[in-house]
Image (cartoon, rainbow, N blue to C red; front, side, top):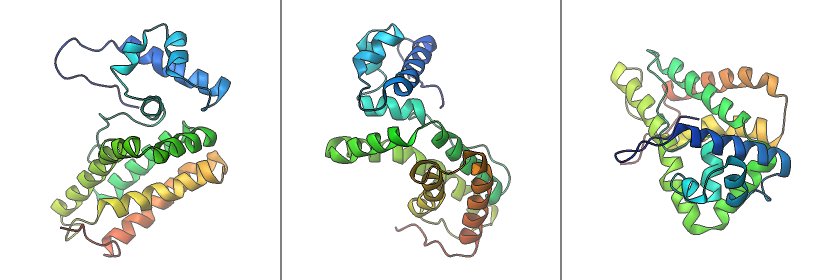
Length: 203
């Protein structure tokens, strides 16, 4: 997870960020997703609830930011090739998913999709960040001449995330084999992109 940033004003205390993240992870391990509350995180972290709400609007956003990524996540560095960029992003997705237990993700996603306003915030924020990263990688490939047009980032997102999500969280398969799967996914998605199998982005 990248460190949260704050534009203007008083710089954010990274020690508080670390204390919150540590508290979230330990409470999830001890009590599970359903029992975790902002009050409990504040008490465990030794901070006020206001410090948490300055960073995260809801419990769900706090957990997502700690386990997966915050809103300041940036695309992987330019490797010089589409496959290299896709492989780097796929490895990062695999690493992020490895931090979240299946029970946590099931509860988190259920809460998000059950609340229309929360679902809209996630789509407009966290999903937008992920798809912006993918769009940057695709734009690089177009600029290199590896792709003639920009494929739909939403479709690419599904292709990258789906197999890894299923492997690690739905099927709970051997995590030691995740790097092998990540490389396989990167190769298959790269081939799909360069073959023109993925539809261009709608304009």
